[in-house]
Length: 163
Image (cartoon, rainbow, N blue to C red; front, top):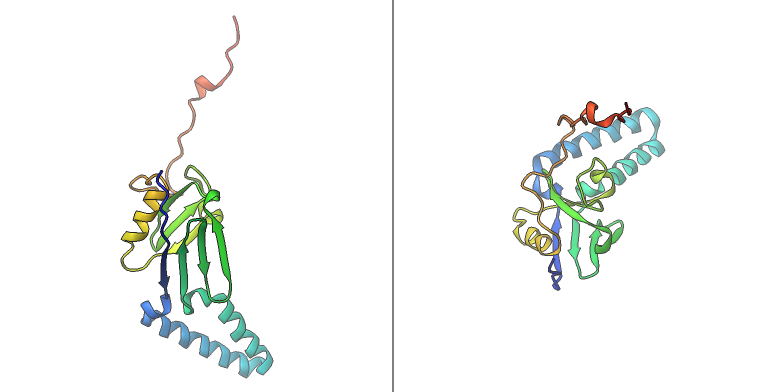
């Protein structure tokens, strides 16, 4: 494992990248807040708008990721999270990004305990950085819940009776 010494920073702004979805989401929010205003009044309509903003801030606001010598900094504009490299064991690609996991092997807890990083259109420099820091993942290390589990052989797991 070679530890890269440079800093790598990138930003992702999903609302700007997908204007069609952004327009549909914004229209839905406006209709919902207007309906809440009409039915419940201005205070609850303001509360509904605040809840939508807090729930969807990762979509509507840009997120900046920074790899440093000490760890990962995730800046979501409303808060900033710092993660140290020593807590992570491996990484793997997902549909929309990369998960950096604290587990050394694949487990269903990866998506809950790991950190999901959204990727820009050209993720080559990020993947190269992670390949230098960690051992490269297998070609397709995604968690599949529909994979059949291997059951141990029942004959070999029972204790043998003397005699």
